Image 1: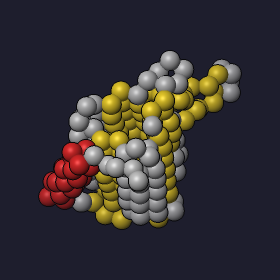
Image 2 (image 1 turned 90 degrees about the vertical axis):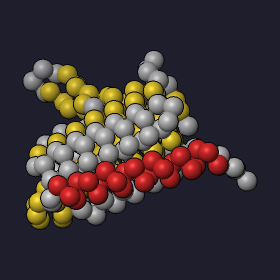
Image 3 (image 1 turned 120 degrees about the vertical axis):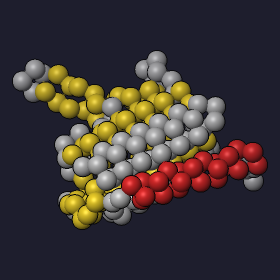
Image 4 (image 1 turned 180 degrees about the vertical axis):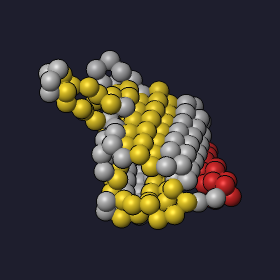
Length: 183
C-alpha cells in the first residue's frame, strides 16, 4: 500500500517490486529492480528514504528516518535513510536514520540505530545491534550486541553479494509476471 504524507508521495521505479502487504509512506524513492517484500514498513514521514537499484528488503523489515534533537538550538533535524545498490537486508531488520553503502548485507533480526554509516561491502550479522553514530569500515563483518568487528571479507565475496541481489530481482520479476492472486 502506498500513502502520501505531508504532500510527499512515494516514487517507485516501474521495474521495482513492492509486495501488496508492504506499507510505503511519504518521501520514499525506490530505484530499478529493487524489491520490498511481505509486511515491510517504509515510513518516509520524518525524512527521506532512498533505495538504490537491485536492493532487496526482506519480510517484515522496518525503515524509519529519525529525529535528532538540537537542544541548544531548540530544533529538530530529520535525518534520512540512504541505502545503496545491490544491498541485501534480511527479515525483521530495523533501520533508523542511517547511510548504507553498496553491496552491504544486513542479516535477519539486526537493528541499525540512528546516524550509523555502513560502508561498501560490509556485513552485519544476524541479530546484531549497531549503536547510534557507529561507522562500519568497508568490507567489515560485524556481529553481536553491541556489534563488533569479526573479520574483513574479500572482493570475491562482494561479487557474491551482487549475484544474490540479482537473483532476488529475478525472483521479484516472477512475482510481477505471474501476478499474485488474493484468495
